[in-house]
Image (cartoon, rainbow, N blue to C red; front, side):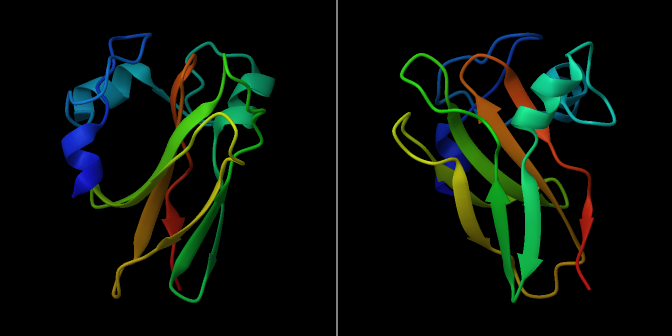
Length: 130
């Protein structure tokens, strides 16, 4: 997977340079935030970073309600199935933080993530696929 070979690992509060591998479960427990586990982040910060996901026809549409500027943007979104990245999209600061990602056939549950260049990684709740 291209994403797995190029992307992130985070210290407790900062995203490290690319080419460091994917986050481990220990890392996710320390530096991956969600509405259920905001980690002390204000509610409005969490809402701007957690991807909103719509599932339709074998695709996951991810939208992040985050502004995009040269100094502060969403760098990437991705979906995981059983802890493995199955689809991703990277963004430049000039892009809209939206993506339509393919979900592998037979998938029962996905989790979506977004990565902000200043505020770490945020996860959606697990999403069941009918």
